[in-house]
Image (tube, rainbow, N blue to C red):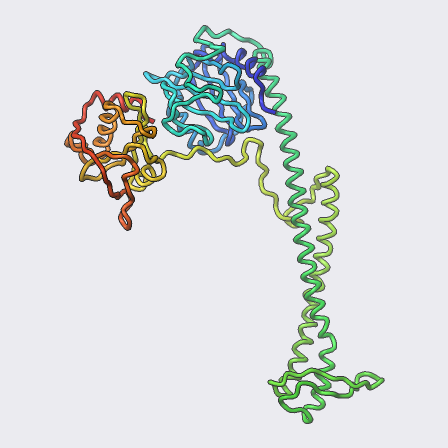
Length: 486
């Protein structure tokens, strides 16, 4: 059960006075879909817990200390580099929706941490001051460098927080236990701790059930195989006698015979037997074949019968265990000796999700608010141009020298504004071998006129319908672009 709109409003009203104005000391990612923010305010410290697991998505303060992985995940590292040491200036909630905005100032830069607790789309996104997406916890419908628009709105939110705005104020001096200071957060912590415990028990029960059924099916299959092998070997139980009978008439046999008829002197009734022979073999080899097959029967008795007995006991044990699990009893006898070893049971937050992939290109915002993407390596250039770039995007490269591919995001039929073109050309020159000279020629064309050069090294392309622009690096333009870089 995810947090609902009314409860989120109650939690937000409770935590705003403590968090607003506080400094973010440390950020952790204890589970795949959960984050914690240690916030220090004058006279008090608090830990904000954010969960985006669809069944338990929520936001509240917590009194628990969560174990963290030895190496922080990439998203956690990214948040640390941008937000640790920053100050929470405002907290707000999207009107009528479970989306919380946290405005954070660090140095001269401002960021928005968007906490969207909306079912299967629950996510945590980091935006720059212009609401452009820098990185997200999980895969998002927004691409890096795109402007964030709430799902219920057709136009981007204004920089001012939309509702339930809390601004920097003197934090209240709360005294008493955690539950006395933060009753709403404490209540949710208890409720979700029980829900997660119940969910873990259910997952453990289901996993035991699945593994035991699978182990039982495998054990029965192996038992059948042993029994079938022994049944085949049992056909040879009389072959020693047949071999002795053949030995006594070898002088009457010859190569090419398919059968031989003889009297069974080992039976008091002296019946007549007809034995099959291999016509391609001589009498001695036919006799030896009967003795060899009898040895197979002896070997089956020695090796297969103990295995069949052990396997029958294992099947009985697993059947008993399956009955117990189906009745809600998890047997302590469950072990790798009686069934396949259980894999570590994931917590509700650690189920596999597709995290937002690390970007293999840099993102800048032009003076006109348009995204400019810059490749990092030759391989990244290929990916940026042919996987990320769209046919109607603008593509740039420094003429006649190694350098980054650059993409300007454009809508179909849109022409790049003059300042955006100069910004993109500046970045193209900066990330090329012409940087030292500080000036040079940049070519540009639509991405659809750029083709991959067959058989050539990564990053090598053929370009048609290109134009050129002479550009000189200007410190003022570079500094502005670097200031809105991700």
